[in-house]
Image (tube, rainbow, N blue to C red; front, top):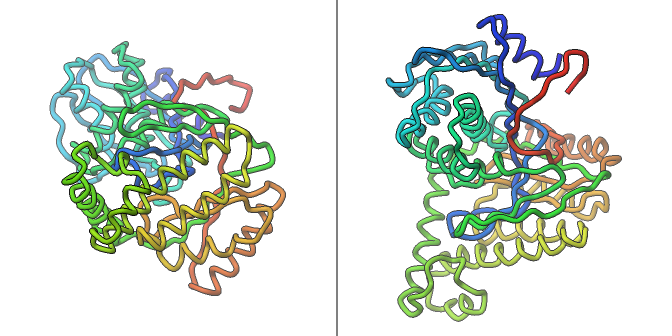
Length: 391
């Protein structure tokens, strides 16, 4: 039984009514890492792994949640939100909290959810929970909230209720994702543009280092401070500079001897990454995946050497793919210090490449490199179920 049908079946068992069914996808970021908080560009895509919601409104103020994958439940009142030690309910209560703060009056609801987004792989299951529920509540209570506002309130749910200072990319791609397209988001203006990513012979393959990202949080904050320090130094002479988005490589090069060497390298990576992303989008326009892949390798080099957020396990996995004509590109994805590499691999070579990589990774680090094969899908949407057909 597929996930949609199993979630619906469980909902009917628990609540004895027919639910609305919602699919809320995970995401990958093809290129553009650590550029979001520097007001630059990112290029994510929604993927075919998702969280599925079965949901229906109630006539009282009670919200009853059932997490199918964990066989766990939670209940709360719309008007009495308390942070939960269980953690997972907080992502959902955060959405209700944002609706309350914006003056949207909703009643309670019954909800069952489950999915196949791998946890801890950096595919943004948290944004799938938040944006998926926001989309669902908007529908069942006829709130009339536009798509960009759904994105913003989902991000705020994680910032304010969950307490994670995430950027807007994950929630944005969740709502705005389109099949066969990557989405370029301008993190300064929040404007967006779609770019074709439709290759029947290519899949997006993730290799999970299974390394704990214990440094990711503290080093992430440190990188933000280092980038800000570079901007403040340049701003003294050029007041119009508001972020690294405004800095050209020529301008930055002129500051090489005026900046701390570490600060210079951090800024250099971000400025070059924004340029790489724009070039990558130009490559997608003409279906030049080889150029796109070479830019991914350049991104990894910058993340490893200049931004210093990689680790020996990530570097090893990327290095293993080089000089393989069936692998178009590879890089670390996400905050760094662990997590996954993202790879563009020809479908007929995925099994061979995966076997080789997992074998050599095991020999080198005595760790399993879990493989996830994904493809680009649409954003959050209502699922229409047919009784006698698979979805």
